[in-house]
Image 1 (tube, one colour):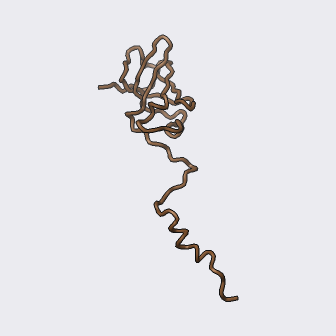
Image 2: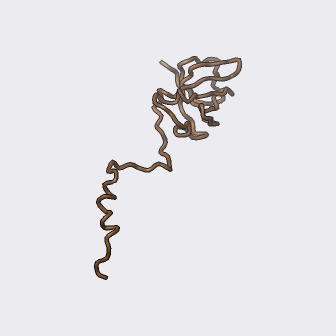
Image 3: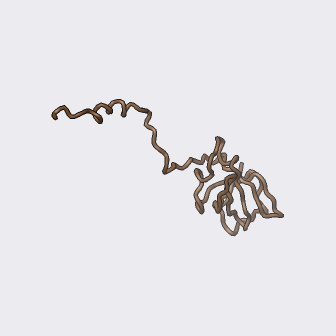
Length: 125
């Protein structure tokens, strides 16, 4: 069973192990992953392949800068003060894109049903 640790200055990463879950704060985005602030001054990276079990096109679809998330430690390098992280088991939900068009499943039916009304010639002339 993994330990859940909050992101605070008191946390000693020297005591943590692979498999533990910690709170991290996304601090930067790159096409290959998300850089995170971690406890005790460590830096972390969630590689794009470790964000969710499904394909991820943009890391920003799942993370917001400075909004903490839970992440599992997959590797620790105490000499470099770096950790590799995964959120695959954290059930992240893709954020709704503001540019996305909602699909209601009706396809072109509304257009087909209304096109005659839109282009009907006025017979009163």
